View 1 (cartoon, helix red, strand yellow):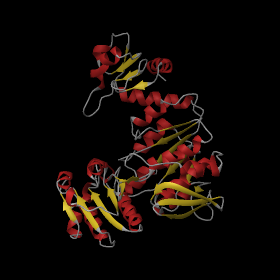
View 2 (view 1 turned 90 degrees about the vertical axis):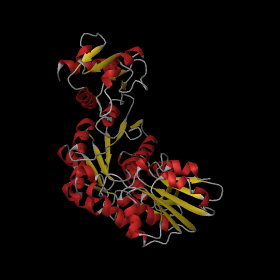
View 3 (view 1 turned 60 degrees about the vertical axis):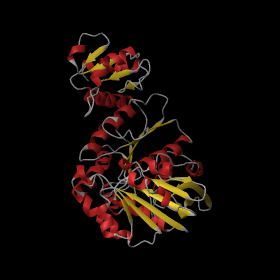
Length: 429
């Protein structure tokens, strides 16, 4: 470790934490001037010091002689190396969670389960990238007994890099499906990219939990001497799915029935993953199940919103062909009048037109009362499913909302985050 990094680490230990945003800076923070695509944190060095930063890390040479500034060639690399150094000093287990769908929900559930027994740190929000993971590691301190770190990726090599910072002892890939094709290029690369977590665990004698319900992941169990399977006769946990109407019910310990506030049978895999991780670390299965029962989804993830005489399911944090299909399949099993709002799926690269057309074809297999398709990309779905009602954007919907009849119905809203479907919910009365 070089002298500069050692010096910065000493400043970090004495600080009140790390900041990369002066708007959120707390007195005594160590501020890093990170260069981004649309901003340069070095422009806020003076502002950070005025707000009470203990020290600042900068790549701007004009601050070289400032006693409160430490100059480095690359502030992002410095932040990442600092996190890696800090992780080495921490004698606690770190759980790494990645996957195409459900990783945030699984992280939240696993954290709740572990909190029944341990002092837990888990990734805040979606701090799951090359900046967020180092920041998460640097929030760990001696009071924490275990950490749950979410890892996201949109191209090859990213998960491998995040593993270097977080050094997970246990890893879980929720599932693998064709997402972020713009960055990965093709599905084979998605598989290689997500499995970088397993590569790290194999090289470092880590523990892997395998979602063997996923055909791709099931094959990875052969690479481990002792894989922990989530489903089947040899599964680590005995947990039975009892149904979803719309909320999931499941049983543990053979006869202990648990009612959740989670909709969608696809969330059962996330539940099993969380309880299994807890069991591995010695959490009582009954305590774990009760913790799951209290979890209420937020942030547009399968949120159920009750209106006067109808119900809304807002599932618009993210969308890709697999998650949309699962949402539609689950929604089709509900009773009563069903109305669907589907918005554009982003980051599909060259496959975007094809995947939206395929989605339109899939809609023919269902019997929803009304289907609204929204967005420029959804025009391709409309071509395959002309019985839908198509709007180019949300503004067109707002202009026609008074004509919509939601009475005594359940309404599903599913789209990529960039479509901001939560704004539609606010307009619906």
